[in-house]
Amino acid sequence: NLFRNEKVLEIAETLFQLTENPEDKRQYLEEAIRTCLYSGDTRKAEQYIATYRDQFMTTFEHEVRCNYFQVDWYNRQGRVKAAREWLLDFFLENRDRLEAGPYLGRMYLSLGQLFVKAGDMDGAELYLNLASGFILEEGADDIMLGNLNQLMATTMLIRGNLDAARDCLEEVNRTYTKASFLPGLSAMHNNLGKVAMKEGDWGGARKAFETAVQIQNKVGNYFQLVLSFGYMSRSWRKQGRYGEAWRSLERGIKYLDLIRDSWGKIFFYTEKSAF
Image (cartoon, rainbow, N blue to C red):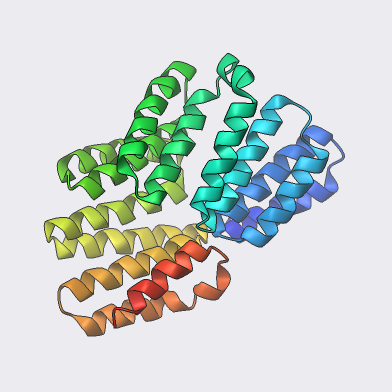
């Protein structure tokens, strides 16, 4: 399946080695970095980011992309404070150039994501609202719009505003489906499952998590698979159905050795510790 992360990475790595055109090599390397980060392979991503920084950072646009790769690398390991400090330092050092180009929307969106990860919903909403204005002004693509609404849905979910969360997730579904962005759609179904759990709709939660698993199996996103099985286990456990909860964890445990995303492992073992 060409949508699987392993196949995408294999193709990107092969084309990177075969092509002699520097611009093509840079694009294939970017795809390899993104794929490694999506799949939770932070070790290989670190190596590729270093190559990008040393050999392909020839314009300010490339410098911006490289810094976002670095921020995502920290974030995927649960090092949220380091990610936020790196991004804020880059913003302060390059403020004039960032304000002169179409960069602020992505900057504020990334800061909003980091505040969500840190559990600071006030800070998250501040930066996500700033991001919304700049993203629309700068002409964002469907994936960035989906990312914005996915994060807004998360803040609404945490605050208990379930209707607003569902509204945001409907927009996520529209934009990610239009862009055929499967990793985002799988995360959206995880969020729909969490909304359903808050509502006590256990059948809806189970359906959402199973849909997420189906998409992740197509993509080969082991990190998201670990999350889905953890949420599924939590859903069964809240119903007092501990046998099904344990079997859900057993479905996910085989993927732990395939990811290097420490945040995913911490989440999974936290769910396991409930037994």
